[in-house]
Length: 140
Image (tube, rainbow, N blue to C red; front, side, top):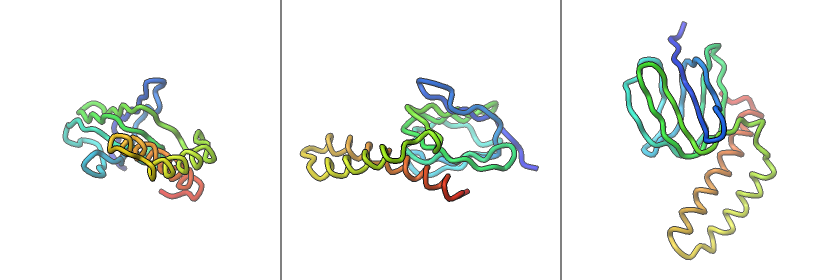
């Protein structure tokens, strides 16, 4: 049996996930990281990505998250993000429209700051759609 640890995901609007988990995988600014029980303590910024949570029953759930901060401690791990959505909460049509709009705007971006903002919107839309697809196809 795997060792479990307490993991929480919070947004400014709601506690998104609180529970005991076997593992968590997400992308930090310098790459993907897997967190397990008794992981060394650290704090790091995360980027928009697919959050993979393996719960206490061994079931893997996927969620879309935006940028945030991950704090790993001895007693619990907390991820604070701007937004988090389960696949069933994502409007795939709206995400596709946002993706197309961002792709179109990126081609006409005039300055780097504008391009960076558009790339962030593009990335969010891509991961929302990826979360929907992973849930639909039962990817673990």
